[in-house]
Image (cartoon, rainbow, N blue to C red):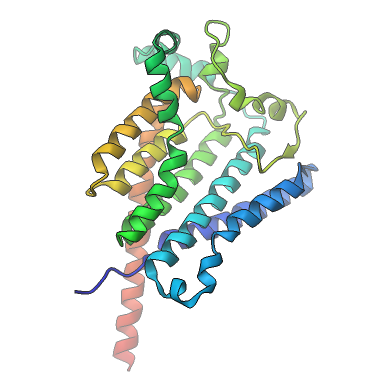
Length: 306
């Protein structure tokens, strides 16, 4: 029985787009006079992340497809996630008008009352605690997914997750750049107080008062589409048809339900997040199909030439 071979297409996409993001931020930061806050801690953080690759210096680990896929993919995901969050800081500084009023009207048209929903959660401590941990579950799901899919040789599912994440993040950045929003938590602040400390950098960036990036304390500043929703769907797809499929599905339903209150999202953000990931998966499949077709064509041509 032939074992599945590692699929590094998603890893290559993560690496390529991470490099593009880094070049873009360096050029933008130089032109707009941005500064790196606490560079020493950032260097230590980078060293810690890269240290995960240390086992690969041993031939036995490098020859193991499962170990190699697990370590390379996990490091690439960490780097890509941080670069993406950092780029979000630059995009917030654009002069595009906020679309919160429009998003609020769309929520109302859909029959969703953000204030009532969040107030109900606050009035029920069990729901508040459950959804709070559901919202933060992506911190555990990332390493669990990489380890589980690598060790069980589900390399294509892991690659598809990475590819879907790359494409959806590009769509998310473009959308938030053109149509920025402060978020429902800030828009409805006069009606209901929720903890929006995780978005404290938004206004200083918009006003120009903040022009520094601290890689050790990055905030998720994008409202529409909800990237927590994107991740919830991607995680569910990655674990589908495995023994963990149903528990992961329940956890990610909790993550989606938590996004209005704990992420300060409109329900429209959640809907557009689901639409974004659907488009991203379709685009990634198209990209990989074309890539595989080109390889097959090249291989056939080479064979005929011989």
